[in-house]
View 1 (cartoon, rainbow, N blue to C red):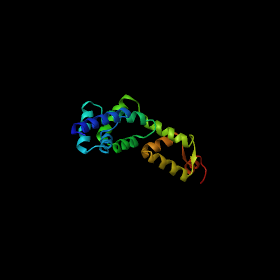
View 2: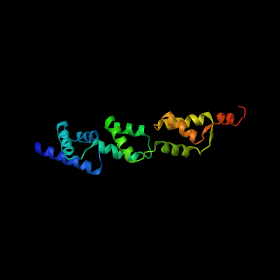
View 3: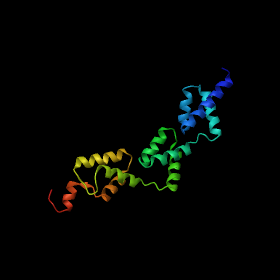
Length: 168
């Protein structure tokens, strides 16, 4: 195979990969490097980038729109960084999407809490610790967790008893 053929094949492979799914620059580079030498893969990447087929900012915005209903801001930003989108680009994309669409992170948090416990629930310490840990692992801040639990009236049994005047 001539040198020109391998470059042409790499370009076609890059475009074929992008037909199936939008990819980050890092993701496409990794995929091309499995089949082609680094120099050839980089040239194919530059080729598709020159047409705007690879755009990490666009990828991040689409990723955020798709994931914002089920994941916290922190989780989304971490996933984007794992996929090769730099932090600054991911943050800019988050700001852009949140300006155009109302991203309600506390609403998502509230729905996750309601899946576990109905409003007004009284939890023992173990249940509360597990719930808070679950929400924190999902990427929500302690401030947001505390605020939503208070809004939902979910509290420790001991605190509820003290409010009602019962001795513990």
